[in-house]
Amino acid sequence: MNYTKRLRDLRIDSDLTQEDIAHILNTTKQNYGMYENGKRRLSIDDLITLSKFYKVSTDYILCLKDEP
Image (cartoon, rainbow, N blue to C red; front, top):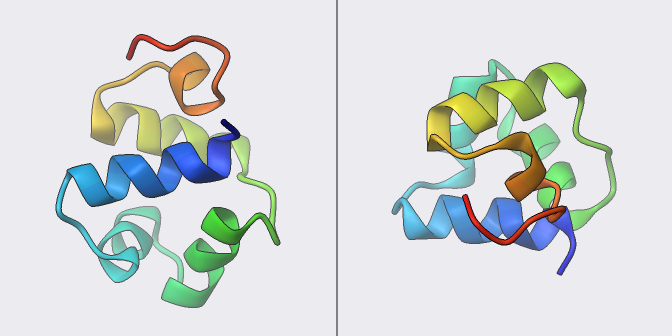
């Protein structure tokens, strides 16, 4: 699994839309969608923000470990 799939899974498991997450990251839905589609790399700042939001480690988001 790569982190783009993990981002999508975390979002869907939380019953959120791409627009919801884009708002949290202070970006556009299109920009966030590029993260999930692998067309844009996740910035470190956004990685940290998502880690705090989902209450999981950055290693979990990056698929370096399987436990949140």
